[in-house]
Image 1 (cartoon, helix red, strand yellow):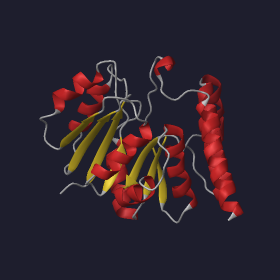
Image 2 (cartoon, helix red, strand yellow):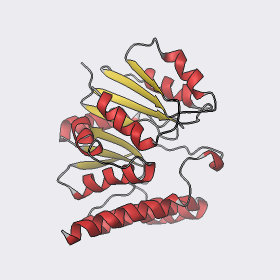
Image 3 (tube, rainbow, N blue to C red):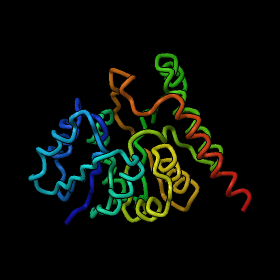
Image 4 (cartoon, helix red, strand yellow):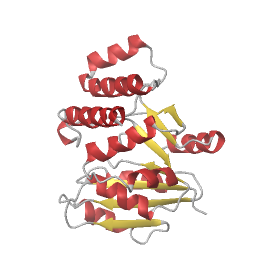
Length: 239
């Protein structure tokens, strides 16, 4: 019985993709499956992924061209057999071990989604100090603040790692038309956070990659995220 699906989206992560896959293979959790979707990598990532084709409970999709991160989520949703899904990013910035804690919480509290927060239990002093040290966190603060204000929530970090009940993930993700990372990811958050869903937060360890130039999320994405969030809110107010 498959209890947890690990979806690993990949795009040009040759340096870390093998470790990312092995992290989940070596994770001590029974009843897991791994879905790897490479979105047209051109750096040799696909050649490394092919080494895992004969491994048990691993399914691989290798695309010839990049057709969008959102498309990877949609295909992953269609393929998933587990009761829950955990998105394991191939840049290995997030601690995969938190997925086990998330699973236990989901089973005990009947959660629809769980966010892995990098800032949970941080005092305001610690958050300010972190922001001074790593200004890139400003996007996390702004986005999380807006969700809290719009929907009367108390999240600390909605950008971190993500765990979903598969039927809820499919219900939302497969009806959305967006295929870009910023649109589909935040369409999903909009529907979850504004809807009748049970969402929890747990602390997750986070180790950002050393070279920021390699990050797929750029500073200008903040404005795209804000646009998606505000547009969704206004659309619901007009109804």
